[in-house]
Amino acid sequence: MEDSTNEGMSLWKKILIGFVLLVFTANIIDGYFIKHDSKPEEGVKALFSIKEISGKSITDVEKIFGKGHLESKWKDKKSGCKACPKYLYQGGKYEVIFIDKVADRITINKLNDYEFTNKAIMGIIGLSEATPSFQTDFVKRWNFHGGYREIMAFEEKNKVNYILILSKAP
Image: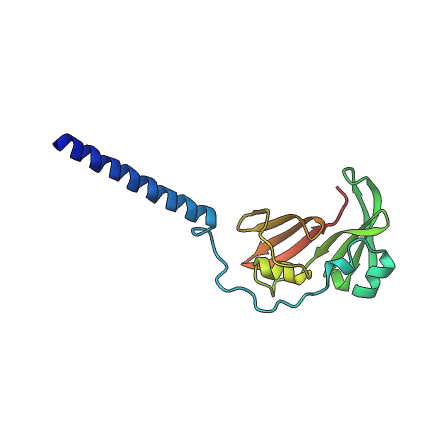
């Protein structure tokens, strides 16, 4: 009789240990032990809507950002660029590379007033909040969110350092 009681206790111990491991694993997957955003951003004001810039001509982009200046010609084998124009706007706050004559690669700099949260990052460019496809403490990446190939945000001191949007080109 004692053996069956010990077997019963052993089974309950295994079930309890399994349950604890399951809860622990679920919490890790849910991000419980990963740094949470302590307070979500309230009413992030978009600097602009990415839809107003992406896929637009130099003239259209200047209507939003003002007059830019050609900083350099950009080369990239993957996208097929041999000399794509790279323009800077508003003292380097915005950097736009025009691929096939339209704004395709857009970088927004000088964002250290914004918390490094999903809501703030998406809010800056006028998109809805979404969970990143990939993230570490220093970078967040969204693949194919809002119709854009890739959106990446980079952190510095718990604030947004810059955001890079790759619209369509590889």
